[in-house]
Length: 546
View 1 (cartoon, rainbow, N blue to C red):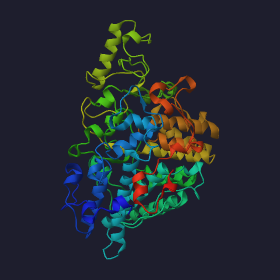
View 2: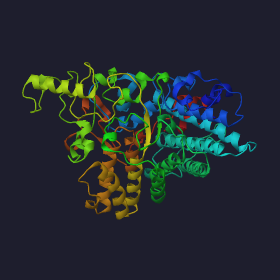
View 3: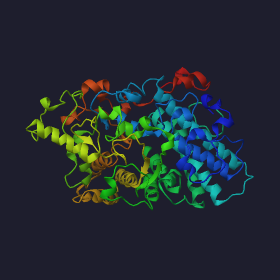
View 4: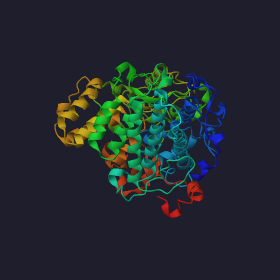
């Protein structure tokens, strides 16, 4: 394993308990598990998987030596995708957890940054644990049962997930580079080994091998348990197919992407308007294929996804720094599309410290409010409707898509990783890229028609028109769910907050991130390899730095 992870003894890296009952996922924090001596049976391997599940959202110091309380796994990594790409817009200056540094591109561009280091080691920690399970099963002395096949499928899927995350952040995009020669990331297939970067193509090849093996294992495996939101933390064949769809889309294997996307969404129907508007705070939503069920004993609180991204969270990052959506995007949503309702273009700017300098009644330019009383009443109405506390500010184009179950609190909520809507959009994009116009229209209509009573996919009758509409639909449907970074790399799109009337971001706050050249000509889109890894890994030298 990579050196920093390799230093862990087996007793430290294997999460285990005396049983693998489902309530483990609901009641037991990561740092209270009992170390195991060996992976002797299915129960002990399931406990390692449970540790991986928990490590996706626990504070990193409970997972990694040298971890930090400021990074709680995918609580940070998921919204980071929209923070970096300019979709989740800051309205004021607030740098809790380094969130402003991330937004300003003063984080992933530094080899010594906490984000670069923790993301790297978190994903390799997943790979280490997956390798321990895979290696144990491959020894061949255990009876192959449906439960064991499910465990193997999950381990292989996790390894593929971690490798895909790593190569998409620490290497040049597959479609905009030269995969056969571009440096990839180390492919670690055995516990506690190390290796060189290899190539992007080699990493993608291994991801494909792992996902196909995972799907084969799941086909005759025990089903994922039925129950509450905690069951969707367990990976299954749908998750593996969904990751295969993402993997194939990112490298332009359009037919594979379309086929896998259709398979992934089976059994996960498009959700209703009421569900879509409920806050995206629980795995119980029918569309959710995979997500982390966050338990209160994990105490992420001020390090959670919603602390960074939800305007209902009662934390200083949010109260003074209302998160807004790109007004160009919101204004383009048809009035017949109910997704427009979660954005508030006419919310008063109540923040005297707003980056645009337009906060407070004295700077009001919205003709809806002709008196200060009307201005204040609108603020009070928003706070009352959405559960904001007195310290929360409001701002034009603020969003209420991501909302807590208990608004105005510091309660952490579930993290959604994969929904069936994404799979419809993958199918549509892949078929459009193959110039299968009718096939793309059909997939797009299934989703767009569910969201917008006037939507007609046949209005987009050419490949170009379809691709433009699919991009728009992805930006609306998946807003705030972390896909902005990988989408922009795949589409080779830069960032320009000032173009076409402006996004609503303030240049004085965004600084060099206000305009960013497209990924094919700007290598700053690639995360720096942690300096700690270069120092520790003999197979990676300063010349390997991105």
